[in-house]
Amino acid sequence: MTLARDVDAFISAATPTEILDIQTSDWFALWLFARAVSAYRAAMLLLDASFGDEAMELARALFTDGLRLLELERLGSRRHPVCSAGSSSSSSRVST
Image (cartoon, rainbow, N blue to C red; front, top):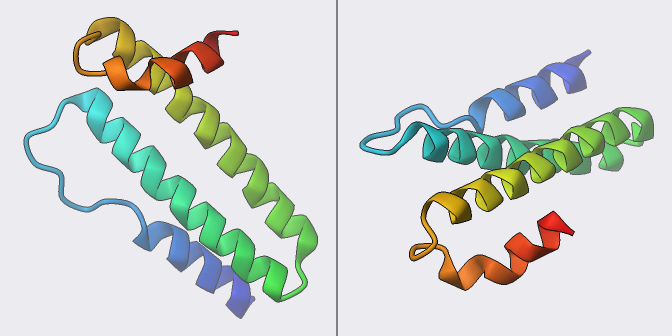
């Protein structure tokens, strides 16, 4: 059970605690990114400890969060085409 508590603490610690002067969508993207980073690190920790099934669950969550981040990027490029002109190649990848 110690490993499970360590993984849970690792995921909880990666969530941003203080965000100032940003839009709600930006906060959500930042939170998702922090969660994805912590899920990746926790999955690596579980793989090192030979917990493949648990690591696979975190990998699935990481994949889902990655899709959500891509969707946020695509929606952001529709609202702010000037700001996201450099990311048009990744946006076209999502829509295909």
